[in-house]
Image 1 (tube, rainbow, N blue to C red):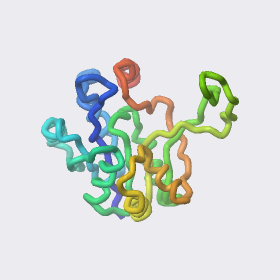
Image 2: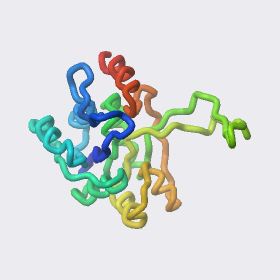
Image 3: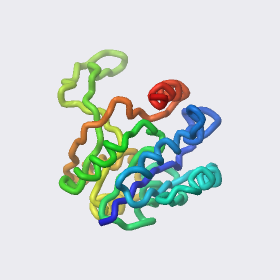
Image 4: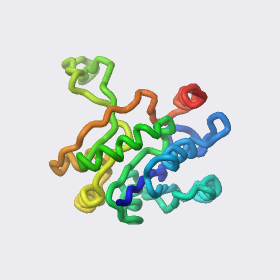
Length: 216
């Protein structure tokens, strides 16, 4: 049995600033290195980074000594980057994880690997803790029952053939969530409880939060 991890890293970090957030250093180490180190130490067999061409050479240097890592070209959007990763290597199960989530833990990765073999399609998620309002034209329409709401994170894990089939059927679209592709096709996706620390770095403020977590 082979288990791969796909790390889409093809974005240009337009909301972050002039520098690609994935090579921003936190406590002396690049954001993407924190992320990939967790998967390198986990039970995955191969890590495929789908990279933006602008940071390709830097990534090759950062990961030159990593035994599981292979770097390929990403796509114009996240869906295309993941599809490139899926085409690059067949496996039995695949985990897909945002490169900009460096606070993921080895425990969650390995639990995802175990659960996906039973459920076929899962996403890490956390229960929504804030009260959520639906708003239209600046006016609250209703309060949504948060007991049924979860915040989706990554990794998401799938039987390889199942997620590859979804990408083939929905090719050319712009999904930002692979579990959502299966939902679109009527498949069942299960939840694996995650961690509230597993935030995605999007802005400079997120870097400050990540510094605190990663020091721990």
